[in-house]
Length: 170
Image (tube, rainbow, N blue to C red; front, side, top):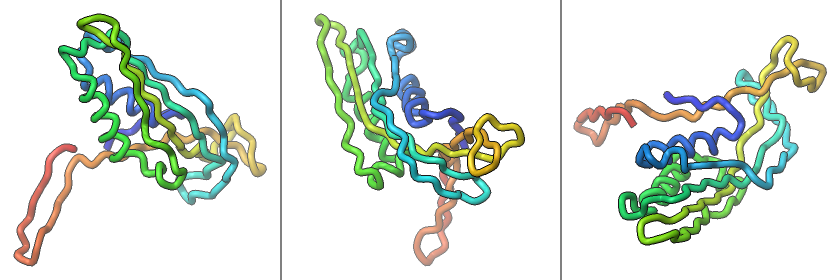
């Protein structure tokens, strides 16, 4: 299991996924940030994992300046975004978030700037903590890390014959 531990966890996790496929010389050219954030006030007790005090919704912006598009087709990065979002963002339908948008701006015969924008919604979860910085409902709280679970192995039984398939890392 992999775990991202910060608010803006979708932004940070997708940033890391883009870094994974970018050539090392482009790593410093990738930037990301949040824009147009809102806090949707919908508190909900989540049991032993804490309480959602609300939902953060924001526009995530990713830019890669001077992308060497002859070495790395921008379509690969777009496909990485599409695949990551479909696999990890379970809240898109609930919040009726629009599809990601992108723009490619050529600089010269070798490079282009790529910008990708997409909306995210993520829970703002709190866990009780003695002397925590957040006072809510007569208790002290801290912001809880949010886990993005990634299967590393799966055991799958197919059909009636009892054949057993075992998968490796995701």
